[in-house]
Image 1 (cartoon, rainbow, N blue to C red):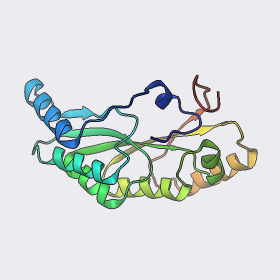
Image 2: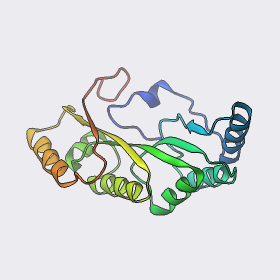
Image 3: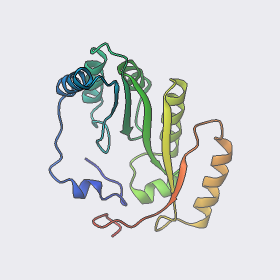
Length: 178
């Protein structure tokens, strides 16, 4: 699992464990029946990195045939086919780890994505009627005034998409920046 330069979540959760899609679907079905609930938040830092594992998980959840409402977190690497199967499974809200809308800042953060992929993911999710939550971090170490100015100009150009929330960089223990 890759990690951004500022993130300490992966360092804090050594020994990452994962369930296969069928086990997750069984757990959701059991919990939905036992507690008569349909809303679930998958609380990993991100969805399975492998597109095949991610797709298999959501296909298994879709087979439950309940009117589920799922909230998940993901990196900005989704394709339309991923989003389609997520929607069939009940995903209606996604937190996308955008963190920046400038390629230079994304590179400094070691996000492993680009402005293009970030915006494409948000656009595809919105077109698929999935609510998007995201965050843009300002004042990351190494970020220059020009980077912030470019970001501000882009924000004006993408006002038709779900707007991100904004925050300042926070230094977390065990992050690469620390």
